[in-house]
Amino acid sequence: MAKANVKDLLEAGVHFGHMTRKWNPNMAPYIFMEKNGIHIVDLHKTAVKLDEACNALEKLTSAGKKVLFVATKKQAKEVVAKHAAELNMPYITERWPGGMLTNFVTIRKAVKKMNSIDKMKKDGTFETLSKKERLQVDRQRANLEKNLGSISDMVRLPSAIFVVDIMREHIAVTEAKKLGIPVFGIVDTNSDPRKVDFVIPGNDDASKSIDMILNVVSDSIKEGQSQRKADKEKSKEEGEVVSADKDADFDAAAE
Image (cartoon, rainbow, N blue to C red; front, side, top):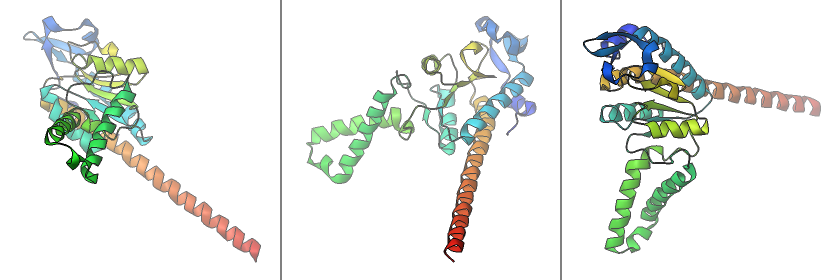
């Protein structure tokens, strides 16, 4: 499993929290000190909590489970999209569609609508529409792609969600909790850590900090995915051996 390094976390500015007047008292266990009116996160505790989260994520992905990444704030969008795409995981970096989890059937219908438009363009049906109709369909397709394109392959609810800024993404967190879906989150000093299952205390406002944490998270997920692949190959080989043994037994009996 990938391990968090306190020195790397420090260099990435993960320790910078919010102004002391904006703090959430429930974050007290993760705060090291106050400096110039800003709370400083205890990076030793961040490293421990990050390791715990990574261990859980590795176990999930080694079982073939999907993790939905959520980050719509400007500083996090590109970073999260990059990591999630590399991991072949679904992600939301535009507006969170209300009911994304709790009304997943409706969201899937919207994705199917996007796919049906693509099919229309391939089979020639699109060209039979009027110019105005084609323009409307293209706009609809572009809007669906913008909001749901990154989850088009997510055919069932995710096994977990990973959130950057749990205050901004409070609707996503609430929906996940309602359905019993584990929530992993980067939690800054102004947030309530009790709302997530796996707390990663740290700066959720700086791209460098978010990228540093996601580097460690991504490495753990990749290890889980590699383990999943190795297990599949092993099962396949064992199946072939069993099959070969049965054939040998059958041949021996025939003789």
